[in-house]
Image (cartoon, rainbow, N blue to C red; front, side, top):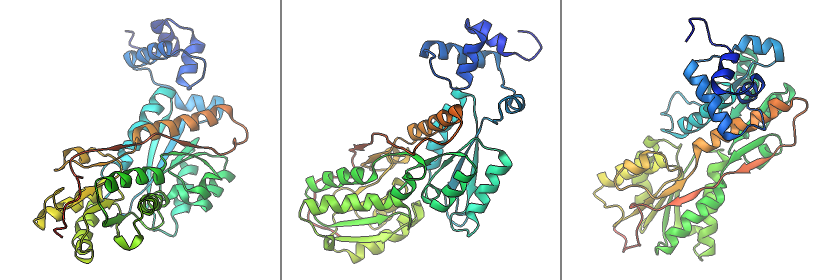
Length: 351
């Protein structure tokens, strides 16, 4: 290999295609066969070819930079995998389409959160932005970004946000409904529920789906004891003892995410109870910890990496076309209930 920096012509020669084809691959363009795209990307990796981002910006008025915004309350622990899963998927897509990904955190409780995000967009000259909850439901922020003609894709947005910007996610209400139907089918009739963050609309939809499944089975909300968590392992530990004490007869505990479910398992074990003999516990997201905890969690698989990947694809499509923004659209990605050992047939209550 020559000592000089490799050029796009070197990539074209090594992959056996024309310069224009290499450019289409690096820009995420259409009409490129998968086999050709793979050959070009392999040549890029072998040659360690780096796109000159400054030249690209001067030539096309774009930076090829995308931002991924997620909430970070510095006073509490982060969700163990949620943001990492989205980031991994987004990074994979950015590598394929020739974009850079910049992660940025903002405190969701700050009164200046929208201002801070707008400042980040202006300073980094982002071509597009991926917003995660709760920012993906901030309609004021979305309207400000629209005014800057920034391509935005929201992760798991609610109905109001879906009218302003495109989004990607699963159907949280249906997923929770299916998970709860599984528990009802196991004979459970009294439930505990650990909710997610206040105002987190996708988490609220999980509670709605849970209640819909109970109502369909003739079980009223008076058979449920609920507590408000914040998606953290710590909140699962702290809230579970009181919830079980207040809810005599609970045989199944539903948690709005896996981190809280793992925290709940910790407290339940400490109380001397057996899962699932004394109490079934289920989570949501199917994060890596759900497989390694004991017993492994029954949960809902939320394809986080696929969601991050698709969000980048949607932004790239918008950036490539230029002009005015297309009508917002929401794309639902398939979920599935994952059956493991933490949930079993209901037994006489031991709580």
